[in-house]
Amino acid sequence: MAPSEKLPPRPPRLEYELPVAYQSVSGFITDWAVNISRGGLFINTKKPLSVGSPVRLIVSLPGTKFPFDLTGRVTRINTAHNGANHVPGMAIEFVNVDDEKRALIEQFVERLRAELPTDDAG
Image (cartoon, rainbow, N blue to C red; front, side, top):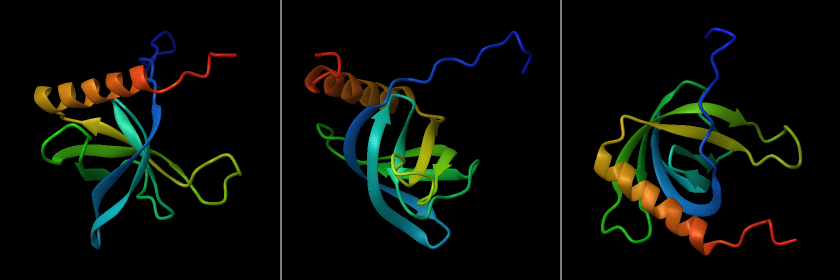
């Protein structure tokens, strides 16, 4: 990337616990996503996959009838020993999401944004 090019801003993430299953070498693992945005989520796990790993996710959003499959890739990991303020786990960026699923994720995130209190009330 040229120095004059800028990365697009990351979508704001909302703190929210959500059960999620993802595929690893040993099969599907169920963990908790601890935040979500329209572009991805962060899974709380002490055994994250390596950065760049493709991930198949099964996510069930409140308000949807069925869980749905998503694909993603690991963009960042936090180890269990990297500081008191870091939750161990992995950030997953959604990839190749069809329009219907993207709309459901965006609706869910916007509904959460409207319902959750902001930190600005100070």
